[in-house]
Image 1 (cartoon, rainbow, N blue to C red):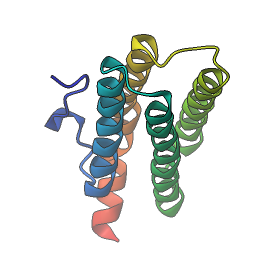
Image 2: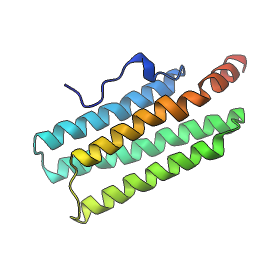
Image 3: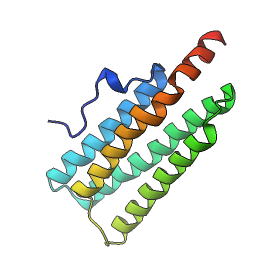
Image 4: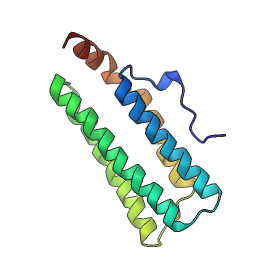
Length: 136
């Protein structure tokens, strides 16, 4: 069973963002499988790199939409993105330095953050962006 099961409650109504969220969910689930299989540090490192890089790509996509459609809560949302990226890079740096493991604690943090972000902050922009993208 996957650590994070996607369902329609996570949809923000914007197909590209939903697809990007699904890729992030898959990356977290892949990391979970690798951790549980005691995979090599090299494989875990590659998954961690992919997760960090793709998170950055996804956040940039959302933030470009915010700018394009003048989303009023863009600054607060961007700060949440920055905070997560900072935390992910900190966790990655700790792991690369041998000061931490990629374990359940890291996975739980990522799942909780992503679920809360999608169901909370991301849902807050849904109606605003969907309406503006429909009209444009």
